Length: 195
Image (tube, rainbow, N blue to C red; front, side):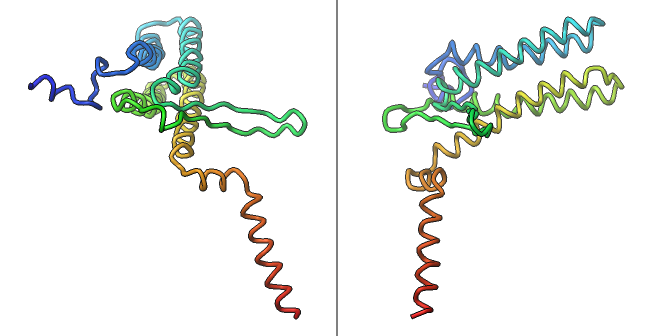
């Protein structure tokens, strides 16, 4: 009875995950880039090797989080589309249907904690670089912060859009409805004033 209460749904135990392999792979990518960087920064003089390995791990983490872990753990996915005619870029958000899929509270908790913790850890490592006056490591930290903050912002926006109702979501995506209502109201006001 006590073990069942200690492993309540939503607690940070990977055994309660609906997708344990996805979760463990996600956490491995999240921590490996930080650990390789920290090991290289503190104990190795071979900056080029650590730079390359860390960039590869960050790229794998970015891809895995955006395309696999986000979809499987919390039912969210995002991507960027570029209009070839105008060159305009826009983010596209996708979420699973809440009526057909329930999100495991443990998966969700691990996902959001790891998503927001990693940029904070990279900021801490940037402060460490500045304190130790090793400015050569700053470009790597800038790349890491760019990738992790992009994923954090995109998934935060994706989550907000997924929680919106269909009416609010359609109003956000189609400004034609709002502009049409405003135009009709203003048009009626001015036509009423003339008669």
